[in-house]
Length: 453
Image (tube, rainbow, N blue to C red; front, top):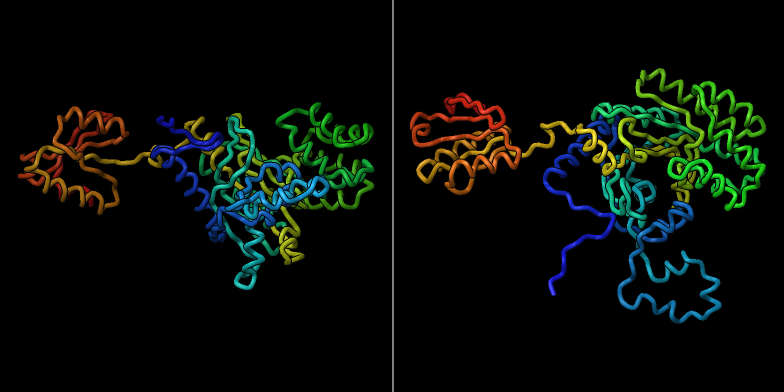
């Protein structure tokens, strides 16, 4: 029986035209990253599962792709009695049959890399990383199980100038792509202060995980989830007005100063927010930046500023996000080492650029010139002309057979080739080429010495 070819749900194949668009995205973000002094690294697709578990919260642990050990992976579990199985948590059982997992993001592997190579690095250490990540999520529009992230992080400094740098990078990347965006900012210390004033400090993770879904499920569903997670009705009542707070950034900060009057942590978060917004103004950033109290970024490791970027003209989830983490390296033995970073979702950005028809034509076109095959007599002349074309930095190809010109023109049209080059015996004898613009229908006869310089 012949098997129908397929790929797992939530993954995609990319043909030449898609890859041209993706490479445009990668090249654009790399160029901006380098302008700010960031250098590239790569880490393995697999990490030790112990490196990944517990770093992304309960929700994140569920979405980790775990790699089954080779051999009889379940032998140890089969030897456990019912009591042992009942006592062991899902993470503990997973570690018995899976020693490795596919990376969930690039930040935790980055923290592991920094600690493992700390004696080789200069701090603050600035790196960018463009690689795929995997999440066992339910596939849907704009949400994939395998996707690329373009991360930029700096570690080894608490300076808010680096938070500013993340906003500047996001601003410059999307301006380069001609995509209008809104940059949302918040601070986890403000959210911690919110948990404090509700009297339920131990529910910070539950609060952030729930309100991080507000754009997906709406306020009422978030309130219902907060109740399910054990928040008291009076606590939810204190949180709700904050999540719907409107006004200018300055007005929101003024309201939150009063709301968090009893929280030192919350006030520190507002201080940082005021300083960051002041730096953004000083930097002359024209992309709109909004202080959004409903922005939570559900990952447990964030401790300070958090960011999220939304496309204004295309309906899709966030296309970029990140934040400050004060001690992510501490779990690997290097304490008191703060970092901040931001991640660009290449797959969602591709969907935005495609949906808005924002890919530059020159960035996604492949071959520029097709040299028509006019028969064996002119092949040596064509080969020389094509070599000259490539040496000048242009892209070209030679049609392989001396087929009818109509067929060669159809081939060029289907591939989006702009020019077809004709060189019969007459042109070869005169050391000339006839270049035809396929779209305009115009053609010009030129001396070979005058072109492809």
